Image (cartoon, helix red, strand yellow):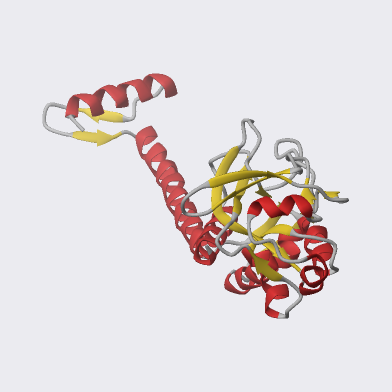
Length: 267
């Protein structure tokens, strides 16, 4: 910076302290006794600050501490558990406190670092980071299809038992393929707010369900569910990480980045 700026700031500092820090002559500038003491003490502070930055850098490289997260029950149990195990192996310095709940936790009043939520986030002052957009398809059990027949077109769903997810418009399903989108009014005996229970009831021959592909994958692999209307899919299911602030500790940053990286590989 210019010499004039340095001189002005030193003069301001001397006025604030009430002592002269520099002895000035026409030939040179020297520290006064007070200036020498102030310099030595200040140097220690600067060194401590540099050390703190170095330690924080190490913390960023290998974060540690307690990560408190709110997770959706079914999505965490069925889908996130293997990813969480891999994350725990990668970062042994982090411990975990997970609260599995469908409720919208208060990230300001409650001690959570992050909340993972499926579906579009509500309008709020929270920071929402989208992690993935999971494709959803139609599934039913082989026994249900054998008993009730397999629909050949979305319009045929009106004559089937359909497992609705509330609180959305559970009786209206919007489906699309590469060429068109269609709304179908469906009926069924169950209106449920749990993806896990919808999945389980569909394996128990109770009707047709719209599920994220990864949620249904294990049941499809074991023959408990079969994808139907393969040219059609339902609305995709977004996944968000919700935080109270953009300024996140390293443990939370790493967790969000890890989930975004691995969830995006699945879709």
